[in-house]
Length: 390
Image (tube, rainbow, N blue to C red):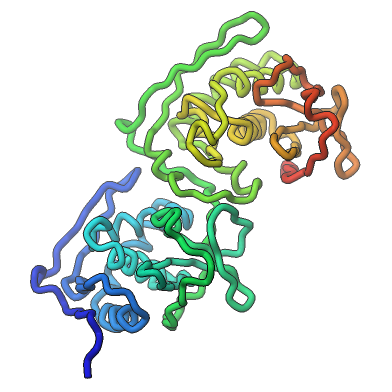
């Protein structure tokens, strides 16, 4: 007796292969959509219905699409997080998210596992949950442990408050050959967006009574890239780079402005640029939740908080002076300290070397290098990142 409410068949609407193309940041992704991969799914969620979907699509002519995805990944040097954005957009072409969320998620999962990633599915409360193996220190999103591995939820943001973390989801047991690769959230390269996608933002601040003006090229696509990016470890977070056009519109100008300054004064200039060129607002007021901005997002957004400025200040000092630095995390604040040839002010001793406080966030006091805000002097801190130039 057949009790399944799911009926999966090859679609009769697409009988011949067709070429699909869409823009993806710096290029255009083209792929052949074979009709055999067009699998119907009636949104009825169970382990058996998902297994049946997999059995059918696994026999389809999916390999040309996987090859196209992996070739694009290699050509444009996409990190895993950017590759996942490509997967999401491809799945949207195959099955629109708004039409059938479960089917859309199944395509995302299938394309990831066939790309070699260890991704898993679970169901419960009429929801489909998509996990992927990740060995990094990630916060803000649910995960589960299986044997010695950790699996992070990739679609948690789609459910938000409806997500049930109290054992409501039952894993779907599917063995996909060669799907063993761990996923990384590290972003070490930003795409070279097309020139017409950039807009110009003017920034200004004063340093020693002189006004400095900047015209920085920025791209709103950067916000889309990091829309659902989780809280990664500080090393990964601080080392997210700028896109090429944004970099070229800012870093050479800063280098020119500080080239005649002593190193200490140059770092002070960068500290005050980061402190005063942007308006301050905490994340709860700005976004309604805690959200770390990458350096390029901080340049793009009107408001930013201490996390964002610490990351931007780190990036600027690293690019222009490449000095050793430590990151100091207080209960309600984060700040930076830089190692100079001679320590300045009340320096922090770490691993036998002294680091001078450089506060990149506006405070009630006009802090100089080596000075810490009065409200932090009696608070305990943790050094959460140490950068040593190679």
